[in-house]
Picture 1 (spheres, helix red, strand yellow):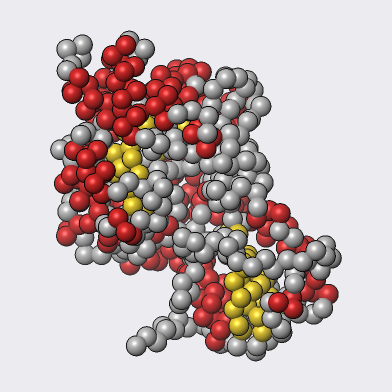
Picture 2: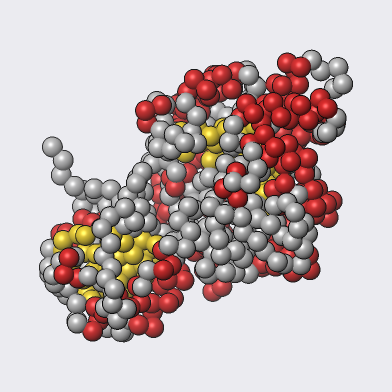
Amino acid sequence: MSSLTAEQLRRQVATLLVVRASGHLEDSQRRYPRWELANDQLQRLLNDGVGGVILLGGSAVELQQRTQQLQRWSPQPLLLCADVEEGVGQRFEGASWLVPPLALGRLYQSDPVQAISLTERYGRCTADQARRCGLNWVLGPVCDVNNNPDNPVINVRAWGEDPSTAGALASAFQRGLAEGGVIGCAKHFPGHGDTSSDSHLDLPVIHHTLERLERVELPPFQAAIAAGVDSVMTAHLLLPELDPQRPATLSTAVLTKLLRETLDFKGLVVTDALVMDAIAARYGAAEAAVLAFEAGADLILMPGDADAAIDALCSAFGEGRLPLSRLDQSLQRRHQALARTGSAPPPSAFPAIVTPEEHQLERELVRRTLEINPAPKISASTGLNLVRVDSVLPSCHPLHGAAPALTLPAAQGFSTVLIHGQGVSPWQANPEAPLALEQLGHGPVLLQLFLRGNPFRGTQDSREPWPAAIQQLLDINRLAGVVVYGSPYLWDSLQPLLPETLPAAYSPGQMPEAQHQVLTQLLPGTGTRAGAFTD
């Protein structure tokens, strides 16, 4: 490789970058233009050798068209990936949106055999639908052990709250991916489960010793590696006991000594997105890319400036800071991973994105992970449907005009009020009666809380006084029922307050299927699926 021309070097370096694009075809449809490149930039970068794209947004059918378009723009086979940890439908409408992994982790405590079987089917469903849409790389399983209930960013994305559960289910998910012929990705190494801050916003610091990591954080990664996972994603966090200077993503001690040498991982190492503030607020796009590669990364995900990252890496190779042998090794690992995916059939080969068996799996996962209080159904015929959602901008994925959480209560005479971060605050300065009920509405209240750990939100949701609000409604005899969608920790904290006679339920999933299954058990006369009239 010493005889490479400058142009050849640049193309080979570019092959190791993964840039962000919208799943929509048109620039005007981009939901996150801050990170999603415009089509002219994408076309230029792919033509110049950039070797991977991470996608978000749009429908599954649009994604089929988009992946074909991107591949036409590239002279080489691309790595095409997405964060579809909860099924392809989590990010692309029309595909299967499955319950979050931690739902299976809790099922594992009572029925480990069933949990493992469902998780393997979960992985296979995700892989099959990813391939139907043109993806060949699934950025999962999450191998973090969520042993900190206050974790704002991992939370229900983890497969377990202890190393044994997380390892058993992460490896089962990986087996399903492998059966479906896609590349998997164990993340976030060496473990992001015991943090109370979000690396999208800040740099978490974990003061764990290597002995502690070997006992708690590392076993799920070892299980995934043993199951044949092709790639490992780094974590943007600082571990002073291993490297007091640099985050794990940029640390030779973590990526080379621990992951490559101690755990003997031979596959691809990919950074988490370098645009996240844990890295971007401390390092420029160029230097971050060089430091990550120097530490042992093979693929650079979402650098803040792709051209600057390529220029800096080329300079580092040219100046001898980085040996060309490392470039060759990374290119070989990428080639080997892609070879294991085979050639994807054209979308026309698939009659549908979702098969009947996959629809059945969606429903079964929701059913097996529901928790329903054994109480009578909601007796109120009118009232207030008070719905707390994470956000309405740029979209509220669980809710749309025909969402059961809105339509089924409305059919019973409940008027809906949405609470969200961009709206008027429902709170007042009274710790014993925190809800400003006079501005929300009158009558019995059906409270539906769509709350779970989500990136970019930090700890803002955990500061809301829902236990006090529920007690307030109980005290004035206005609480008709409670549903929590998402966080098991919120549900666990509220259960001691709920009378045995109060209709209440918990679903790990937030999708319409979960809403339907919950509300048909809580509301009278809602046992059938009704379609909305449109003109």
